[in-house]
Length: 239
Image (cartoon, rainbow, N blue to C red; front, side, top):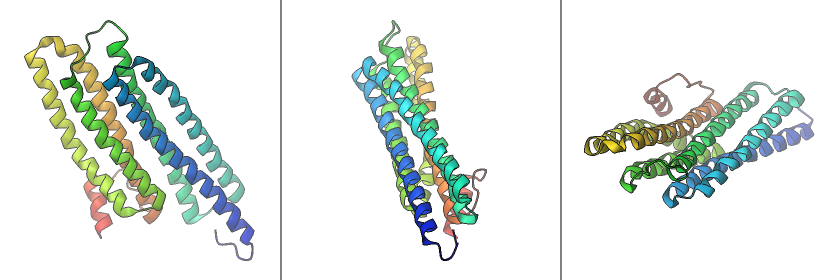
């Protein structure tokens, strides 16, 4: 905001933006923690822990509501223009990405309940291995995207976008690897379907991290990259 001679307006606006920023960072930390906890329930065959992860999704939903309320209040009270308004719009989109990332983490916890709480045949450790490795990768993507958000670091955002390109290749490799279990033992078909659903949830988790990196480009440069290919976005950042 550029109103001259009223420093108190600057202070209040900055304080409100700082508070909103903290809420978004808290959401990012919780989304990462939710995914880590969900995957750990799979490792430990911990159905009680899985129910806890699913219940904790409500905390992320509440932060989503709080962030939206803060954005609405800032717009109503301050009527920001230009760059300030652009940032608020983009932050709102980051908030939505984080809430959806939490939904994907919840689906991984749902796999634990499906595999170990019912009477279905539990998958082997070998089949679950790809979920573990992919979850580490997409979790790192979200951590990096939130660090980029914290400092509006375009280099870090570009790194997340590059990771997104590699994510597509990883997904294809994982699906080929999983298909070998079907050929070896047809009893793995049921597990294969569930594991693929889990892999797709992790892919979307990484996709939300990549989208956040795109929103950071919008905040920093004012360029809407939502419908641009990743390679085109990276090229624009190198110019």
